[in-house]
Amino acid sequence: MQKFFKRRRYILLFLIIILLIGFITGIFLYYHTDSNTLLSLNTNLNNLKDNLLSNRANNIFSHIIVVLIITFISASIVGYLGGLFCLFYEGTAIGYTMAFLCQNYALKGFIFALIYNFIFKSLFLFLLILLLVKVYDLVRNIIGFIIYKKHENLIHNFIHNIKILILIST
Image 1 (cartoon, one colour):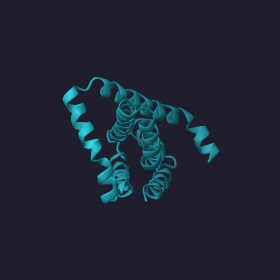
Image 2 (tube, rainbow, N blue to C red; image 1 turned 30 degrees about the vertical axis):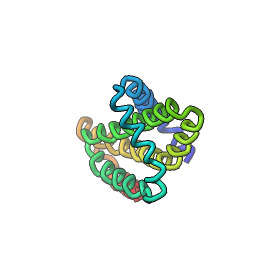
Image 3 (spheres, rainbow, N blue to C red; image 1 turned 60 degrees about the horizontal axis):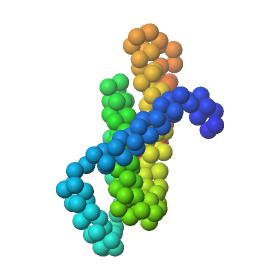
């Protein structure tokens, strides 16, 4: 596993930078949101306790569906950008949530945002980054085939990457 990450450290660094840019964008968007929207969010947040106690939040199922969709869409060169956008969007959502809760509830809001994002987003983000790394290998093989006409081990690499993508997404 360490060899896997060491060989792909630049793509991992790129993906983490996209996530951090999304996080900073989320904070920036929060501080440039008009007061009516913030008031609406604050009203909805007051109902959050009742909603959490009365409803079960099953975000894992929706995250698995998103990962499956990204797996199949990202198998093309153009579709890879959709996976990168999803990573950026998740970073923006985390940044916006963190800024909102920290601004309105100070330390309690920060602790709640950390726990909430860690529980609900950490596994999803890990799988998404792992998925994007493997899809990058797949796209690189496809580009190598299209541009450089590399036929060596193309079918073997393609089938191997598809098997790993299916394992990651299930």
